[in-house]
Amino acid sequence: MMKDSLMTRRTIRQYSGRDVEPELLNQLLAASARTQTMGNLQLYSVVVTRSAEQKAALAPAHFNQPMVQQAPVVLTICADFRRTTTWAQCRQAHPGYDNFLSFLNAATDALLFTQTFCNLAEGAGLGLCFLGTTIYQPQAIIDVLQLPQLVFPVATLTVGWPAEEPPLSDRLPVESFVHSETYHDPTPEDIDRFYAEKEALEVNREFVRINNKETLAQIFTDIRYTRKDNEALSQTLLDALRRQGFLE
Amino acid sequence: MMKDSLMTRRTIRQYSGRDVEPELLNQLLAASARTQTMGNLQLYSVVVTRSAEQKAALAPAHFNQPMVQQAPVVLTICADFRRTTTWAQCRQAHPGYDNFLSFLNAATDALLFTQTFCNLAEGAGLGLCFLGTTIYQPQAIIDVLQLPQLVFPVATLTVGWPAEEPPLSDRLPVESFVHSETYHDPTPEDIDRFYAEKEALEVNREFVRINNKETLAQIFTDIRYTRKDNEALSQTLLDALRRQGFLE
Image (tube, rainbow over all chains, first blue to last red; front, side, top):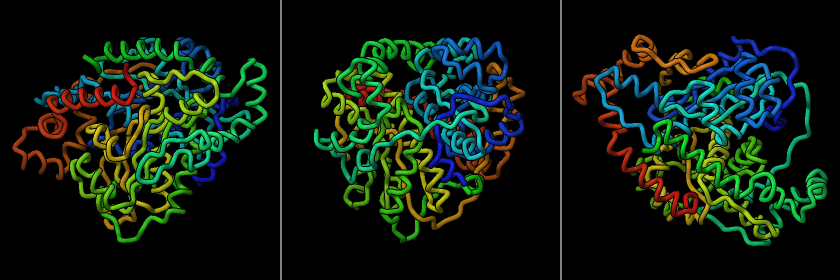
């Protein structure tokens, strides 16, 4: 049951030596493609990395997180208007998908497909780690995977059979992210209530202590996701989008 | 079983009179929140529309597609860095999430969450329609739902109990979207093979005939998703991102 596997899911970063059989992987990718897409055009592609050389080449783009080289399979899921554009060019049609709307349409298709894959793969007992680093240094990934114009990496998954069972991570209360009819801006009292559980967790309190911070929020703003990094990476991301043909 | 519901899923645009019980909806939203997110920050929010007035106000933003007013529930899923930013401001931290990278990080969280919701809701027997129009006229949605700075709509779902069973839609062969080690640019022969089934479908041949087109691809490039529309909507989208604070 997918619901059960979802409720006990955790990110898996350590994998057993067992391979992910190509037949199983293809079945999961084929089933994931049942996900709805824009005009049923399936504006995505998946590059499967199994070779040690290619994993080693991808690793720096992901800040050398060890999962990239240790997982049996790395999947890079891309927003892809290339195939549809080539189809149009082969059929006396004049495509116009070299623009930002088309990027976001294709990225949407790619991310919805990715999450169905996550749910199915975890339901089948596989362990996954979603690498958010994909959009931090996209040009390095584009070069290694030889992605042509109108193809852009939006998600990476490391995939294998779990060799760890980390604790379940916390979640914010539903009232913090569900709004009725209109958006209700959180008051300071709302914030206290929404974040109380997260801030009270011993692992998070320890994080604050060892980093000499006053609050958990400072861990995110000062260390993990800083303004300086975000602004520099925004520029890198926009430059890569331009080079791949999605911004004129 | 989620796998079975996925393999027989279809987009549902007609709903029975039965309501979607708030308790069921909240259970599904809570379970969807098990999906992984950036730094476990859950950079999304969901606005639930049940009132007839709000549905009528949203309808024009979705080109008055009838599902918006006929479905018992409309969900607008938003990329949301607002709550996290307010949290930081309440905790002596200095957030820096008013930039493009942060938008794409939050949009990623929101879309992954959305797709888990789709998988779970369809598994529970609900019928859904994903409205790609959300990013075509985002400002209208922002106004109706009163979305503040750093909140941006990225997906809309109409949700109800199915009152139709349309045929399963076609899919491209797996080899068209799965690449081994590096991206393989499709040749004209590949394109013929990948699109043969789609082009041969009687419903698509009829589409080409009644629109006086030569090829199915022209239906997409000349009618459904034209260069002119894509370029104008790209500008609208970038303007709205700027107004919501995600592009300086």
